[in-house]
Length: 161
Ligand code: OFO
Image (cartoon, rainbow, N blue to C red; front, side, top):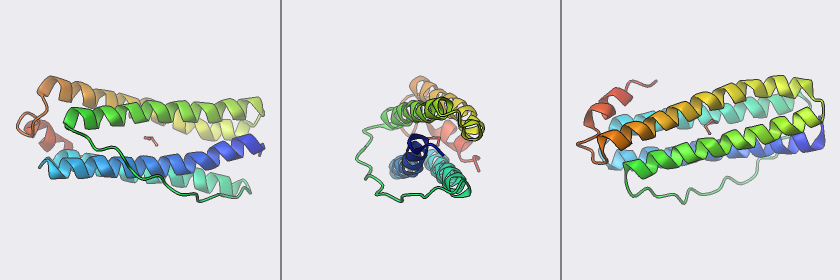
């Protein structure tokens, strides 16, 4: 595999694990706000991010590349309210989409067709991730910021497995 593409994929393993960490932080925030449905939704999201990291990890190893397990950054983000929490998740998903697209650009430039095929899954996934995070922002914006405002939505969110 082309060096640049391998390096970007390697860095993406770390970014997906950081995503898991960030969502765990958001889940913790909602737990402490007595919104267990939101907390559970973001915890499931954190698990999904770990799966994304593992998908890239396995792909690199299958392709004969090494994987550098570098330090995962601490989560500094402390939401002041529910809207700030869901907006940060939405901002983060747009950032991740841009990072995936950078890897795709490198794979296209290197004429690495196999990696392009592999990344197609992530391109599709990011469309879904942005849709979910955007919908979540819209709902919280409409309903309000307090645990009371979000009570019904919280119950609905607890069904995500
Ligand atoms: Fe891995 O999709 Fe969210 O960040």
